[in-house]
Image 1 (cartoon, one colour):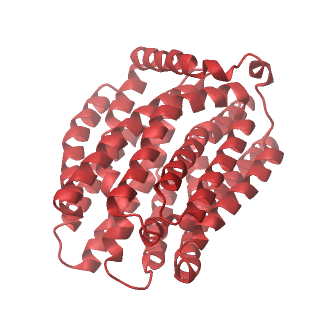
Image 2 (tube, rainbow, N blue to C red; image 1 turned 120 degrees about the vertical axis):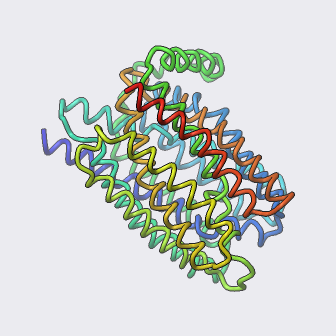
Length: 401
């Protein structure tokens, strides 16, 4: 049994690492690339907004596809569709149609992956009747992903990006295609009986049926519902730093410096994910940790916007990165622990749909405040607003057990 668990974990780590590498290779310079090829700040904000709107519309259908077509087929689609979106952005010369199509395809690719590989891992571990701790697996996966991510982001920005900002984008598409081959050979498709009954034309009928299923589960499982409500405000806090950090810290430097910044970001993410795996009896302390995290996160972001010193501001940004890295592992594990349903991916997609909705709200708010004032005001406002909403809901969740 232990040998089977090791094989499952190694397959999961490999696919996750390659997929994430295909994203991080261009992540440290992507918005700089969009600006270079002619897109203005409003159009870049449009890209982000379209990405999240499409994510909102496709999260639950993606969960249906994952539950119906199987984890392998869904992951294959995710890799190839997201790669196609990057190829379109690579050939773009500032045309709005390529921006829109790129946002749509990359978002669909992201939605198809969300919850799919995690569900494959959880289901595979459950079949072995093992008491393997998921926190530990997700923590190790985060460490592996971030190690490759640091190197990939740095090479993408400082080497490929300084030669040509389009090179990291095309490289990401190629790596995602390579990932598809690993998915094909590493994952068996389990849900063959369901495939025959699935009809694409009925997808949005099933969308609403599954949304109702998610709402039903949300109502019936109080622990799950409290967790979801307490987690959603975090998306507003992260809207500015998560999407504007390149433009915020690059300033007017002619040479690309975001690759160097990415190394620090990657190291702090690595440290955050590693420490989570070392916390003893984390299940008993989960909500206390999350409450402390949201306070530190919000205060760090708000403070860096009013600090005049660049180095101090970036140091506070790294505190935010550290907190967010560990926080994400704790949250996703908590959700998995509170889903006792065979349609795990569909219910996770229900949560990700709500998360996408809140992210869109955060992006619109950040965009409007950035246009009318500046990014400092936008980040400060969203950090405080998110804290005001998140803190009471987390305290209530803790009291409700």
